[in-house]
Length: 377
Ligand code: PMP
Image 1 (cartoon, helix red, strand yellow):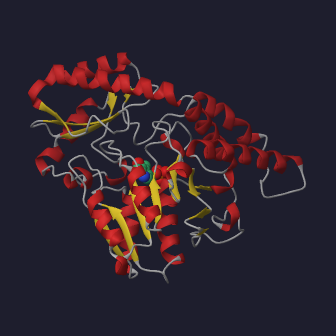
Image 2 (cartoon, rainbow, N blue to C red; image 1 turned 180 degrees about the horizontal axis):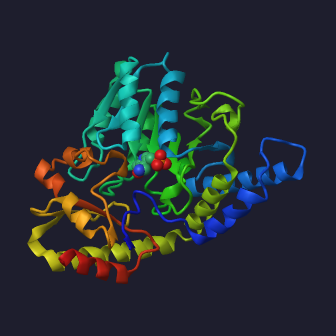
Image 3 (cartoon, rainbow, N blue to C red; image 1 turned 60 degrees about the horizontal axis):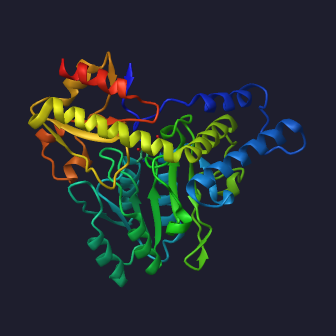
């Protein structure tokens, strides 16, 4: 089976599996217990993983909070910041092409009296920065939080986080980014850019599922960044996320982060080469009967969204399913026509004939050749 659905999830790296193994069986102590070796070893492993994740994100280890994944992190930041700063305002800004874990949370907050602006996007799903500039200058409805996805999960376009952060920092507005799709694919340094909150997930970078992180820059904009916790309880993770830590998953995430940081240049090169090869083979084979929905510039290497004229995407994927794993878009909104493609101005026919091919550093040229053979059939 050729696996080209790496934006949905990635296979676990063998080094990650090996690192996790002892923490499932031998080192099972609770890292919050104090007086015996088992617990101390578990705690040391958690802290080592935190160091690796922090290095990958460009923040301090104490700014990393382990969560169950990016869905939780996105909920945590939007709800937590909205609640914490409700006395300062009720306006939140996000974009029309976020992941459902942002959009649905924003909709929920609207039912609680918050006002949400969903920024328009261009034809490659990038947020409209002029609209954002106008909003931040509008003092009476100055937002308390701006949340913009870094790299889009359906078409791969990168938002200009540098300019967005500059704007938010100048106007003293908190900035959150969903960086789930970009880790291990582009360089990330949330401190250098001036990002206050970041969400991410381990299973998109060859780590285990059910583990992710929220990073919070502790002191930005001249005051202490805070947010109301989503889960209350035993005060783990500095009180921001109670619950016994999932040590084996954290160790796996730490190892995946270590590898992603170590191999970043090599992975970028490999994925760009694979992507270039895939696009030229597709163009050669299908000429005018295909159209690329993804931009070629400022994008995550490895995500190619392509439209096959007059082909029903679900039928195509079913026909290919014995040989190739692909998807029509986000695994989290299966069934519904893509809100991302629709916000980019693509009509329903275009959406129903679009397919997302998402590669990883573990894919090969031979797999692309085989994929083309299956596709032509
Ligand atoms: N944000 C983005 C951009 C994603 O691609 C995903 C995963 N589909 C998520 C959030 C949710 O991540 P998780 O599966 O860890 O909850």
